[in-house]
Length: 194
Image 1 (cartoon, one colour):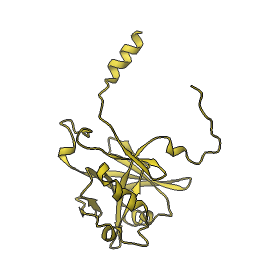
Image 2 (cartoon, helix red, strand yellow):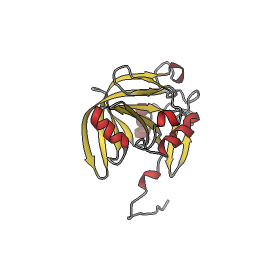
Image 3 (cartoon, rainbow, N blue to C red):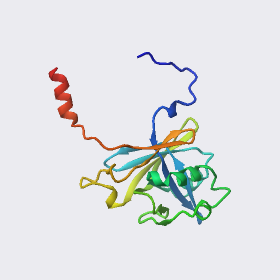
Image 4 (cartoon, one colour):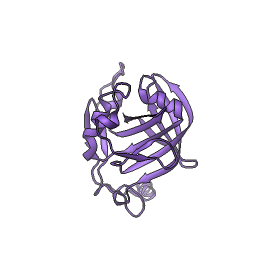
């Protein structure tokens, strides 16, 4: 199938969905919540998680000051909250009060954890690097809070019970469908046998 080639690349990140999380931060007695779609696990041992935040964002200054953040993984039914959090700056409004965001204290960090999240990673910053117009904050996961009913016995997200919100770009959201188990080794051996 022929593909379209772009050389003026300004919307490449809209070609695939990304988990729409809410990153929470707190410093100087002020808490904030920010919608973040650019995030990824980086290491099992030690457990590192990376978030990408523009220096223009209020969350950036709070994370720089405190050295802590929480990544909150949100269900599809909280999509309106994710979008509302993305629509305003914490410099101008207390999002927790204005949007009535339910939270509880972190167990290992001084950052709020969202009660509606099906999982939350409490992180302490171990490094920060600037790439282009964003900073990558590498956080060591120091605690995980999760809703047991959202996961199966292997601690994998049960997509029959829980539907994570996905960001498609340009204010479009979706969710994941049912999960499928694919045995990588078996599939590789079958493909090689052909």
